[in-house]
Length: 195
Ligand SMILES: [Zn+2]
Image (cartoon, rainbow, N blue to C red; front, top):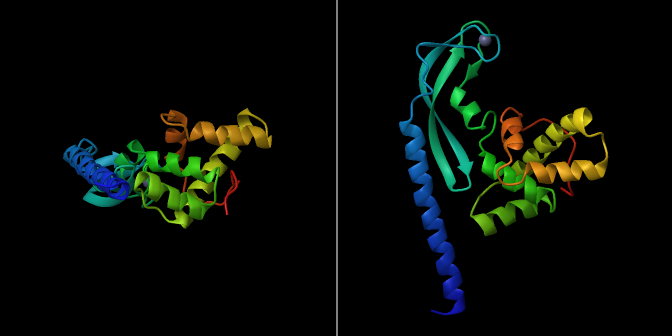
């Protein structure tokens, strides 16, 4: 086997291993139905009674690949809010990207363009996201950081840059918690050198 064949081989095996891991995690999560809290649940917006309407599927892009996750779906009788409590638990409210992919994307987008971020994630991690998605992630991160810095760290550019790298660091629970509720489409402070 020559060097080129080995390069193809190792990537192919990595992709197969990731696909297998994704299926195992997907099955594990879908077997767990603890998110079904009964016929009604307190609405996350108004606190009224939200009725259970079955399980709904959602496609989530993760560091292991794409997963189809089923979640208990509730609709509020008062304000019509629709929600899945598991989305909050998994930090995928309003987004189809897992926290791990968000972290990777933010880390890359703070350094290179959104198109390069998309290409890097595919080449290095086998994760497929569009440049537009990378831009939305960076904007959401920037907005969250912009809001947070006003409260905690002042507004210096250097501090903002240190913040986004800290937020995208592996295992950072702060980013995980804050990103869970950030709508992907909101315009915000742009971190890094995006575009
Ligand atoms: Zn409600």
